Amino acid sequence: MVRSLYGLDVLLDDLVPCLVGRERGGAIRVCAYREGNPVVELVGGRDTGKTALLDALFAAYKDQAPLARADFADSKYGEPGLVAGVHDEEAPNASPVTNLLYLVSHKLGLKAGAFHRPVRFPRLHLGLLVVTAWRPDGEGIGPPGLLRAQEELLRIVTEDRPDPRRRRAALRQWVDAVISNLGTLVPVFPGIDAVIAATLQSARDQLLTRPDRGALRWWGEHLPYFQGDGLQRLFASVWDFRRYGERRREAESLLVEAFLDDIAEHYGVVRKWNRAPRPLLLLDNGHTPAGRRFLDLLCERYGQGAGGSERPAVVVTALGDGRAHPPPQPDIRDLPREWPKISLGIPAVTGSAIRAMLNATPDYPAEPPHLVERPVSYTHL
Image (cartoon, rainbow, N blue to C red; front, side):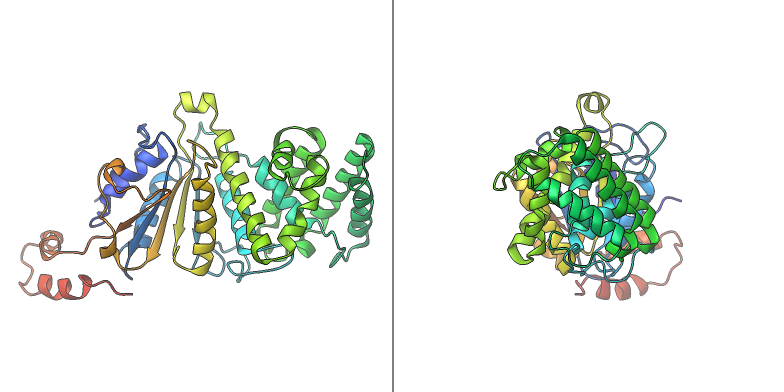
């Protein structure tokens, strides 16, 4: 028996397939927005089926498309391997946004299905490496090997015309020291430290094999207010993140843009021609402070064109009065354009719908539909 979600099946059967480019059964679906997906926010009261919808989408697409899920109301983002508090951590080298980007880039980088290549995040991982591990003031670097590696790299990075061989050697020594001391630098990821090490390893390859191209060139172009080449600008930009406040927000916003541009890069000409499914992000409790923080950055970069036409499908739930927003429609193009986010309300359950649900046992007493309708027709906040 197929489970039905009252008022939400249209999201499962029409709206989300148009965002992902795949139906739940795997058939190709033409994407509705050629100019790029919006964020779809589902608003409703407590116990109205928001999390149940994400459960159904996760089960449907876990083998169909790159998929990541996070719960902003959970202190571990819903990931058992994390330490409690990653959703509100503020440290010189970490924030709720960087912790989330580590998690979702790892999840989207897992192989989805037999024929889909994992998404790679060279721009994002390079930025996360430097934000996480580079200590320009030397603060908190305990292991002697890491301290020596940073001091040597600092001398070379600040030179006007560093020798390329010496710089590659210093970078290799520093990244290897970072990976060896990951538990000291990133204590909030003890359950998935191997995952973070793999992330940093991919950033290491970018630094050593393509020093003036690809991801590093992207950072150089997006940090025009710093001096030097791409590497020097990237390392200097860490001060923005470490100063907190608006400067940190700007640094986080650039990391979100790197995340989106990596996805767009992954979906190049060949994958467009093959109509490869887009990644799907399922984000629960977007009304929380951690949720609003990330979604504001995401929508801001969407509004500035990041990711272009190859943006991921993003479905986020939020606690609120669903009556203030239009209900889901079969064709997302018929919905009001609240670009770059479309907010939809969970429709109230009616007595006729309750009677239809109870018809599986036609001899039910007459009173239950009325008794059930009274509490569920309100939006409980």
